[in-house]
Length: 170
Image (tube, one colour):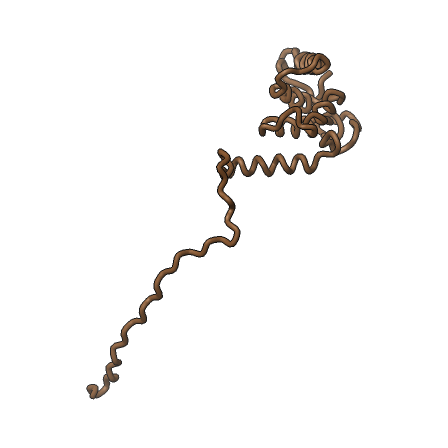
């Protein structure tokens, strides 16, 4: 019996045994490991997704917002920087390792060969694709020469602005 004023002692209860740990369940459809180098690298996976996106969003032979330049506002991609979206997308595909002979890439390069690109930024991006063309054709060399000359001569030379550019090449 318990002493007066003190509660009766509780019988000792043995703590319940913890259930045995189970190994973590495997995902239902685990990603298949690939023997291809870099196939499971997150950066390579992101590049592959970006390439697929670019191909999916290509509009025939380009990625432009409008079919032709709509004006001369320096910073707008549908005006002075028209051609720049296609130049960036084409450059991205080539930098990701896509072949310039791939029909979709070749169409974009041909579009840029014909496009009247006048924006400094668009022209700069257009010129970047030539780093990935091993053997440009004679007409492509003519386009490259014309575009490079435009960009090189577009720089300002007056004191205080030397080396700067307008939004468009003159």
